[in-house]
Image (tube, rainbow, N blue to C red; front, side):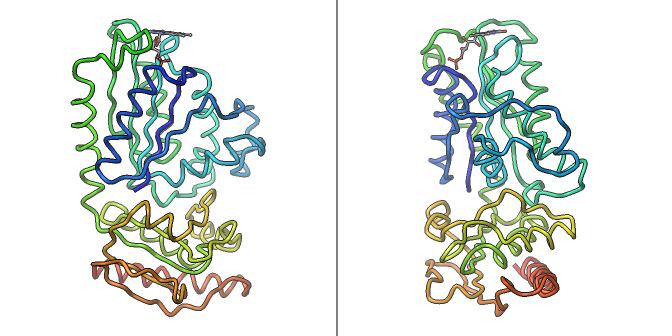
Length: 324
Ligand SMILES: Cc1cc2nc3c(=O)[nH]c(=O)nc-3n(C[C@H](O)[C@H](O)[C@H](O)COP(=O)(O)O)c2cc1C
């Protein structure tokens, strides 16, 4: 399971960083793979408010960290942890820019009617702390985070917030933080960890295995942790796959082919391996059942053949889910 932590303070070694690092460490101890995004070290330009994403589904800013990496990370993550100090009763401007730019994902969902397959199972969690002790200290940030999580297709699943944290090192000295984090992470991850794990593998992870994973996530992401990978991953998901999945309302934009060894590192234990022409590279995972689906590679064939492959994959995934 991949968990993305967004470190929203410009202080690189301050209180937010400590809190998020502690949280991600606890996630790792539960077997998750994690990544911390230090937003202030990235280049995330502010939203222009131009409205192009509402019509086209893509941001006009194409060459900053948001377009190059962050949309993909947001789409890949099963849990997104937004962590921030309170600045003027909200989040600092760097992470706010990232949140504003998630308008592109909001538009794809609410303007263009496209569904991110992980939307039904992805969770969002907020970590925040600030110097003062007022009752309303976290109100603005919580509302902002809730709206952000909805935009990125994550269910808001709670927060850990701390008052009277100001100087560097204050968070570390908090008497209950370690226990709070441990208990919160266990509760947050328990339902996700109870799921069976399936991996769909083909050669390039750009057509068949991407489509199979999308259907499995959409139809049963609450019961299955779904991975997909390729023995020789392509540079991008096949554009015809994006097109034929979009025709039936499923959004695979921003996803990237994943190398097999990376997927197996992220989730070393698996219940089911479904291979579609990955040949000898198909991994032997102790304890996992293996199925080979005899489906010809649609890459380079007609768009009609891609549609037929999509429909056949959907049927097989439905049968798989019904029987598992
Ligand atoms: C520009 C700025 C604005 C701040 N605004 C608030 C505020 O509105 N309320 C508050 O309680 N603390 C406020 N603080 C204090 C920070 O939230 C606090 O020092 C926090 O622990 C910093 O976290 P960090 O170490 O992760 O950067 C502000 C700090 C800065 C630098």
